Length: 165
Image (cartoon, rainbow, N blue to C red):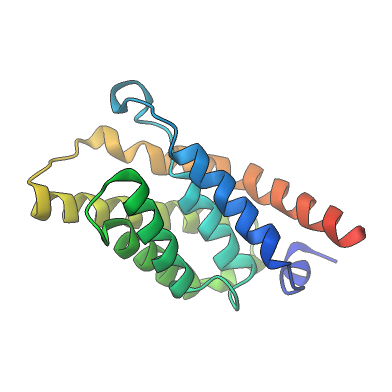
């Protein structure tokens, strides 16, 4: 059985919720942008994982809800992350066939989705707050894309362990 076959088996909602909560907690840690500009949005990565592996459960509605929670928790403009997560999820849901390809193609699609997420955030912040993000802010999607194979394999191991019990 390959990763694609395994992705259609149902995963309990509490596994999805726990993984998203853990990633949100990592995102909410108070780091300064100056020293940690390279840290990716772990919530966005986990949302991409679930959108690829469980599209029937993790669609744009979940992305919007998670985005609103992230906005409220980070005191961002309400709807900012919700908009970027919905755009990112829409992009990745229309490219589900990448699950059939290797990790390099998945890495490229995840990079494109994370760059789209960052671009939407940057443009929205520019129009709303007149806040300009430098090119340094676009390092995080590349780091997130490099973390994708590790996260993907780790989550596949977690779901297989849960299913074996």
